[in-house]
Image (cartoon, rainbow, N blue to C red; front, side):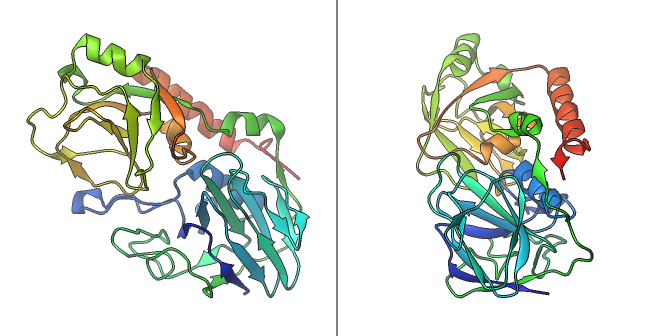
Length: 313
């Protein structure tokens, strides 16, 4: 069993797995990786189970030393990673030798980069998950983002793993989109046709105030139908709320589990990973699809992720 020494934590780096599903009724959101597909693929590249805990870095990566060496993979956005000064490949496994240092810088593409290590990051589980839930200060490494000087334990793993990389064909299908596909929200009929048309024809910019709880948008306000009187109800990941003022909020991985604002649409499951790669000032728009199309897109995505041709040895 090895360790990772945190020399510099980066802007906002946390331990994440695929989240703690099933606790919404008692007020605990799932949390987990903002880009679950990148984490899943990173774990497969190093021979872990898809849901093993890794590090999620946001906008600016950290610097990590491996006293005992490790097999690692970097996925998601390009943070210009190097190992002892030599460029490190993205979407491929690699051997970090004893005492070497992995250094990441500012993002060159999307919002988040994932560091997966053979054996996973070993932390105490909270409600069955290693994910850090920042708002409650629970899970992950002491319930918080990483700090300089932190020591992270690497879990044990048996057997050697050959070098692996993601196939070029697969990479094309998992890169994030800026046109997010959505289905109608529970209160979509509260919004008149003109308001819905404006919503689908407008371009929106991701606001600086966005975080893992919600992605706030700037752009054409949907005023008609917004702020209507309703009883709070359960809300889902990817729901697009329209509060008073008409500026939309996409509920994200640390969302509140109930809400009292009308929801005009919901991002489809196949595009959830795209939300995790949105940076402040990125521009997006929405494309409406029907329920059957949403199910088909998710099924096709899962079939691709399960394909033996996805990972090349």
